[in-house]
Image (tube, rainbow, N blue to C red; front, side, top):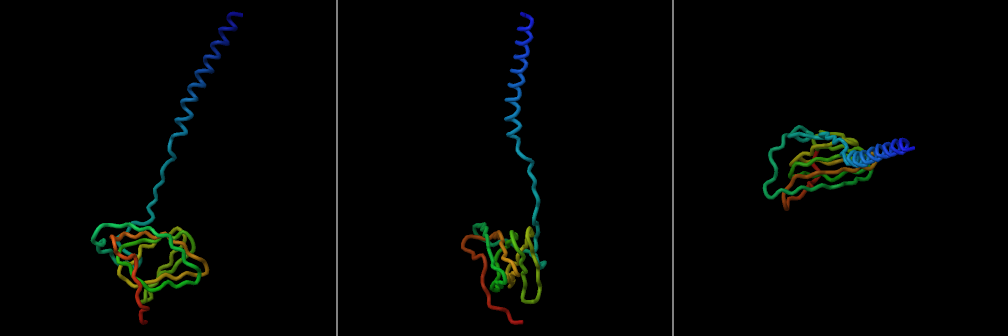
Length: 152
């Protein structure tokens, strides 16, 4: 009977140490971060039409990030941007066009490096478009400036 008690006591000690070990291991496993996946969506020194960016605006830097929702069958006004910016398409598809006929179509998951100082506009098709646009401007500088419709 004494040997049975010793065996059971040893078994209980073993189970206790296993439980202690698990109690220390499980939280440590839970705290491990998931692997980080980094994907470069855009890295460029030129806009979609091939024009090289010259410089950032002078003055105190100001980053602006806008969510822009555009209804179907919409032609945005002709405009320019005085600073580099990039648009990420969350939904729909957008055609960006210049008065000279240059065009670029972007769809979900694509990024468009916008033109700087060049007249252009966006045109939607049958579906609404949702964009996230990142502007690298400076304090007091407008994000875009409307222009008159160009003569063709």
